Image (cartoon, rainbow, N blue to C red; front, side, top):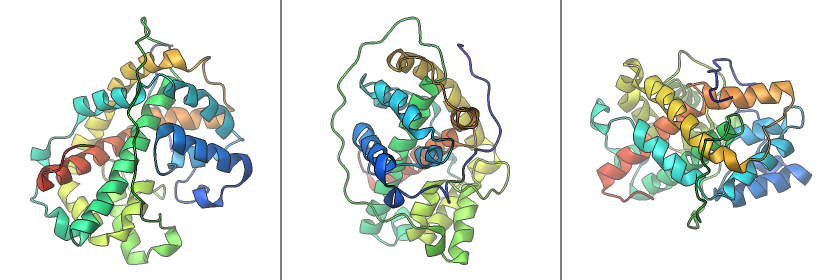
Length: 285
């Protein structure tokens, strides 16, 4: 298989109700710790937490995916995808004072760390899980060694019960960016940014023109196309084609090929990080 068909179905798990990292025990807790260590991320995003509850598919999916990281290539492939599909900062539609929206420089820094963490995790999952579904490219690229990545402590992820109904409406508002309509399947980034309700409000306002013009969904679709090409290089390291129970397989396929799923969050997340850094005069990580 050299091409993958877009999957526009809903995912088979809800990111809001999927198992929390702190609730994991036994083998699941060990796999979550391994995911954080191998991917060099400070959190486990919803695809892994969701797979844990789908036909015991987490061990098999992670075992195959982990092999790809031995190449050292996923982060470089992600940079290529993001560079080629980035939303234009000039299309933001409104001037944004990110510092004021977050409540000050230290609060903005804390929020940016969370955005960066999801950008790395979502982006790497996007590419490596897609690499489980495609045929390898004609030539195997050379492996490389990725530099170590470190993270400061992150604010705790709020459960739904920790968020007021008023603030949850803001979470749902930003969650609708780049989608066809409201959904109860809220991307975890927005729940994590609920520490800063005004920031969520400003994000929704700033990105509304990009949503209304279709720029977000178009960029997400382009990201899928570029990720497919990069994933074929990564597929050399995965071993055999992924074999999962039907529902878990459909979930992984939808996660990487539906523009409203992880591709959308990669596009939005990097736009936000780039916009904040551009205004603050900060270097990219």
